[in-house]
Length: 468
Image (cartoon, rainbow, N blue to C red; front, side):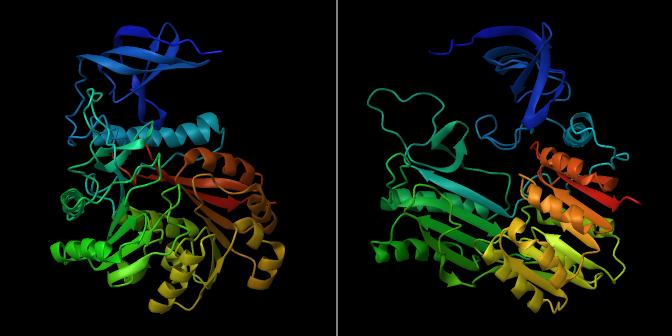
């Protein structure tokens, strides 16, 4: 049975507030209506496209009167590109919305008992703050209007567009990563078009060029990873990569990856170093962290330092504690706090990340960190803790899904005196904290903005074991 199409027009609606997932909201006859790309105070006409049990969803079909708070978007791709949806919203209002998001998830929805939330730490840079971007090739780029009969689809290199899995928005100028990111991408597109290199067709799994990944550091290192579908013609690949190297001698690490799979992930593939160094390095308080082609590193380097500083402060280390850093990644937090701990145990699922962590610790002259690779729920057992020592402090920095229930059970059984929970998803964090609150009180909450102009927020909670 086909679902009846919804097509309702709400005229002269006043946008009331910022909502979750980068949207804004208003009310119509007692129903909450969510829309994108709107700012509180806007007067708009809304075309409703979805009616759900507790709310409606739609889009702004006409701007009747813009809010006095509305800013002109700085990016020419705003409104089509799926990123940076909050560009029209003043940064102070963005921060207030993220602070409210943390409160809503922990208190209004999660019903947790928390102290007053500290003011969110805003990002010093609100443009060109990312150190990593990935761009996708497509043989059919997204167009603002349907193609005319007989008009050929054009290739593109940029970001995926919302619901269109097979199309990308061709990006000329992106405000997320500093130069030479834009120049590298635009040169590669021009070279590919000039030399007739085919762009990937995801529907048919064919086409030579698939992705490029650009990584950079505050120390001036640049890594480029080029993903191609095959290596049947090594001479073609070498001409391509040589042209990039010649045009951008500042690229210190140039890799390529052969990906013939039906998905874009390179986590299970082996990057091949074509030219330059095998890694780039970031620096933090005199520590140097190796970043390889598959390494995880916080994408806002400046804010990462503030995030880790809050984490170390909340840990309250005196130099005598055994610290477990769970979901350690490349061991950045573990090494950052190691100078104030007796011993740090880092656990991470990705073996390559642990290899980097071990190497980073050695290069930094750190001798009190040990790292282990494997599934957290399988490694963090009573036997493991018996062998490596009971933690006085546990630092949690899990992926968006949060921690596994088995991990929560081991933590509650181990009962360290203090914990610090770092999260990129306050919703899953609130769920986990509800479990941990059986034995712990939340003593401090500190949001950190890692991604300006988006709805995403990082949050750090300090936990203390309840007295018996």
